[in-house]
Image (cartoon, rainbow, N blue to C red):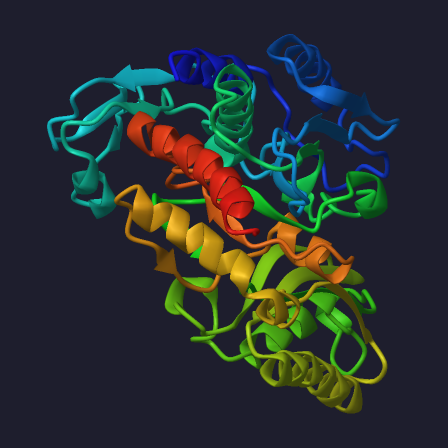
Length: 409
């Protein structure tokens, strides 16, 4: 455990931000820097079958130390950080024995991490927090997961008295841009099931996520001198604005929670002759999800009937709710739940308001619930993680390995 914190700090100070506009895998060359470092480290701690492919997918094995047939299980995390906020020159700060008051992340820029706004901080009074310096994200999503998996494997290597079956681990690129599982070789991985270590606060255990799609809209127009534009100009920006006005105003991320779905417009650009909108569609319920896509098509049809065929829509499905693939093998969730409870951790079982590599992997034949890595406020300057939560995540991984072996007669 003593290597957990320095290992994590080493990982987060390696910039691995992914790029949604890149066509390569990994999407950024700098992800190779961490990938190569991890391959060396996995050899050093004593894992076997360490491999890295041409797309920077890393896999390794901890061999079984029992003389009976035990399911092969896996643990997976991603190397990249979100393109939403800078991951360059991360300068983590360590706050020991947190006192429950405001944390000044950056005095010169007046950036403060306050429990008045982020009330979850108060859960961690007396603990050690790792924060940003207010100018970058931290990268606990998901370098905490990587550090926890590596530390757990090292612990098992050093403690052969803990009995376990064959354990496979994997680290992937480009999860933050929805491609983490696209080139994952499930057959090569060879696990019966796996867990992504990519959740947030301690106790999270998730086997349900959004159904997800993205939509790209293009609005074309006709530019005419504004002084003589009556019945001649078609302003693409105006049509785009009308499109937005026809969406449900309260069904957006900032007004939804729990099982509520949403539309999220995240990019707009435009001129008179051309405007573009990018948005995402999210819903846990498959029927409601399809209804959301149909609503967009109906709105576009209405605009085209009103103005002419000036609006086009392309919808692309991204991932599906893994619940339907996990429920038939629900014992894999129960093992994780038992592991947490045996360690004094209260499981928080809830749907993910987002996606995970596990959702795609589940539909590729590898059932894959998601377990907490411990961080909070991902993808921004207020990101932080309690060291104690990371330590508990390591213990959960070890316990899952142990329970899986002990439950097989």
